[in-house]
Image 1 (cartoon, one colour):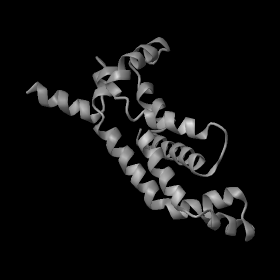
Image 2: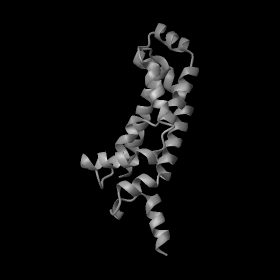
Image 3: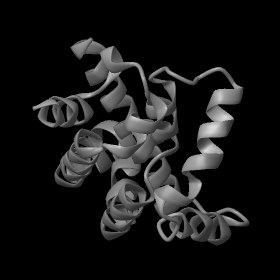
Image 4: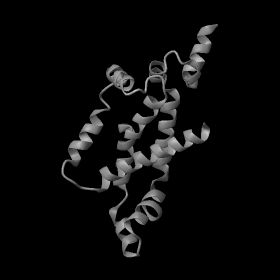
Length: 165
């Protein structure tokens, strides 16, 4: 179980990394509109979308499972995408161009030579933000896993335990 959680966490970081990098470096029509839509999700509280999301997840058969708590995270949290995007915009494009002149492919420039080595502090910060956000998440597991106490995460389980006495 712990290995799967680590794998999911690393997949989440990869998704956030790719979305933030694409928003910071690539130019295509509608980029600003997509970014505004992403950032506008920050304004919308979770409690507003909880009932429609619950109905949707129940209709597709995910009620009483961990899937409603796992899959939506792969669409990336807007805070984390914004944070990494701003960090990537601070890395000069000249570094990537210099690596390309030295013979690095675009993938090597992204992964090994320039971008990831420069962005470890930001990636670790985003990882910590997401870890503590998921650790402290109480309301969504309580709603999606209601009645299935053997699936409760520790935040809900500890509250149930404390309320028992």
